[in-house]
Image 1 (tube, rainbow, N blue to C red):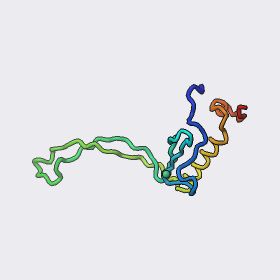
Image 2: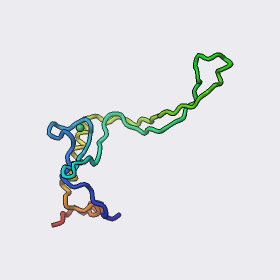
Image 3: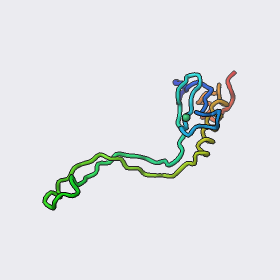
Image 4: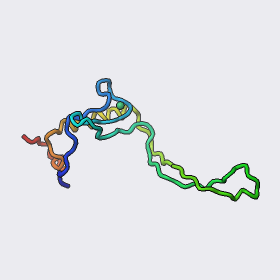
Length: 118
Ligand SMILES: [Zn+2]
């Protein structure tokens, strides 16, 4: 992979960094004044759309019981939970690593080379 696209400029910081972090989990590029990532906390999993077949009217008589409708809905597979203190530690870690690597190309990082350009 090449470094044709550049990442948002450092320094990055996380929302609420002056008070230990915010529960929103957003990480920002300060010079670009834009979010670059959101750290997950709490329950997490994958949501996906489903179509449910439901009775049009639950109280319908037996003769109308077969009047069914399709209803769009969402289901979710839960994988676990990330405590908020762990999420805040993750935000700090990501921001510290990005800022410490300022000047090192992403390609060099991917190759395990941590020498800053001069
Ligand atoms: Zn926030």
